[in-house]
Each structure stands twice: as C-alpha cells, then as structure tokens.
Image (cartoon, rainbow, N blue to C red):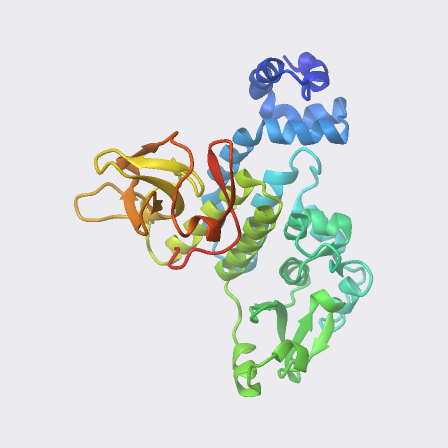
Amino acid sequence: MSSSFPHLLLLIDDPSEVVRTEVRKALLPLASEIADLLKIFPATPPQLQALQSMLFPWRKSQLLTAWPAWRTISHPLERLEAFHQVLCEFEFRWTDPTSLSDKLDQLVPDPPCPADQLPAHLFAHKLLGNRSEYYDPANSYLTQVIAQGCGNPISLCSILMLVGRRLGIDFRGCSFPGHFLVRWEGPEGLVLFDCFDGGNRLESGLTEELRGDLPLVAVKELVKKSALVEEIAGRVLRNLVAAYVRLEKRDYANLFDLLLKDLLARGKGRGSQVALREPLFGPGQVVKHKRKEYRGVVIDYELYHQDEGQPHLPLYRILVHGSPHVASAHEADLELDTGGLVAHQLVSVFFTRFEDGMYVRNSRPWEGSV
C-alpha cells in the first residue's frame, strides 16, 4: 500500500471530484504512516496543503482522541507543555515532525543564564512579537513559533515558562486584560516580563500604556495572581477560534470552539462523566425541530446540558425563522433543514453570508455562551 503513496500525491489536487474522492479513500488506510512516508516521498507545499485539507476529518479524530489526556497531568508546567504539544501534533505532524519538547530543549542556553537574563536572551533576538501578522493562527502553535521566530504574547510567555522549567526557574503566567505577561518572584520581589516586547522587564505597576484606564491599585492586585494552566489554554483556544474565523476556515474554527467549550464546561464540573464527542450541528447550520415545526439557524450551543429525564446531549440556541425568538433545543429533537435562508433580525449581526446551504459565522460572541 505504501508504494502507492507517491502516485496518490500526484492526484491529490486533481480537478475531478470523483478522482479526489478515490484518492481520499486510498489515503485513509495510510494516514498513520504519512509522517514517515513524507520523509521518503517529499511533497510540494501545495500537495501538503491539499493533504492536510483532504484528511482533516482523520486529523480531527486524532486530536479529539488525544485531547483529554493533558488535563490529567498533575504538574502544571508539564500539563501546559502537553496541551501545546497536542495542538502542534494536530496541525504540524506531517510538516514538522520534531517534537515540541525537543525544540524547547534546543532553546535552553548553555551555559545557563540567570533567571532575570533569560527573557532578554530568548526574546531580544531569537523570538519576536509578531506585530505585522498578529492574528495569524501560526502564532498560537509553539513549534511553529519557534521555527518562524515570532509569535503572540501568550505563546511567547508559554515558551519562557517551559524553558524556565528546564532550568529550575519558577516563571508563572500573568493573565493581564488585553495582554499576557510572565511573573517571577525574584530576590527583590515581584518582577514582570513582557515577552512580546523583547522580554522587557516591568515593575508591578507596569507601564501607562499597559495599564490603560485601570487604577494602579487594581493593576498591582492583578499582577499578584498566577494564571492557571486551564486559563492559559482557554486564551490560546480563543485566539485560534478568532484567527480561523477571520480566515473563514469554518472547520477549524468550529473544532477549536468545541475544545474551548469542553475545557470551560469541565472546569465548572459539567460533563466530567461524559466522553468528548463532536456535536451533530454547528453554528451556521440550518435546522428544524422534529416536533415543534419551526426552523432556524444554530447560533451557538452548550456542549454539556442535562435536564432531569433528558440524555446528556448538547443544547442548541437557534434563531427562529420568521420570528424574533431564540429557541433552545436538545440535539435529539433537531434535524438538518434544506429550506434555505432564515429570516431573523440577528442573522446579519452574527453571520457574514449564506453559502453552500449554511451561514458563515463571524467572530462576534453570542452572549451567555458556555
């Protein structure tokens, strides 16, 4: 079977849908071997892109299977690294097989430098804040950040914390509104580092620009708090959802929104006894109620919702056609609808257009979403 791989690569972007369907069927049994096959039969960038897209459902299934494990790790920084590794394996398992752990090991200075000098060592020249393409999703994948030499605030701070761990330095995250910093309790007290700004060292009062309208007293209280790993993960996932919405990559945005919903719900003790699975419907899909005879477009959903006597299934929020109402319905009560456009006053607020039988969601959050 593996001998057919180079021939399948040549057909992967064939204009015929019939041919591409057959190629997809032939590639699926090889999916787990593709990383090794690409070392023998290198693919061009367009072929790699087509391969990623064609086997997105398989890659997604691998991510959903691997997803729960990182949350069971007791050590916070090990848990943070495992979280980032899961994301990197999903997106770059075929294009960059070097593990995140190996890439982080390569960033450790030899000889080691003092804690207060490590941020400048990493971020003055090696890793920069990506200001020109701030919303690029690559800024959220640590292996890609290290490879391209730039990232967003939370990815750069994650790298500092994980490299620091290898040197026995207790760096912590600081989830400041609109930004992300690293905090360190040094011999002289609390020190903050802005990894996005070259590892710049800050005092507890920050700068006037970072403080904004916040009173100095409130700022000093905020920077005393260390961000939990789950809080960091939530911010990374939000960044990915927003980035893919901007690119109108619906499948990616919905996938990371699912992971974010799972993370937040389980953090509140909901869904702890339920295996993660993808919901049947997603934002933008037009559905109809099997019994109540209304139709509408899904605006959002709660991943784990349970009323007494009901199975533990997602609960969907639906903009009802021909009505100002927003309905709630359990998954078992809904089915896809092919009736076309939905007339509701909020459709233009939360969706950009109607395409291929469904609406394209924008980045505006639905109030009250989980």
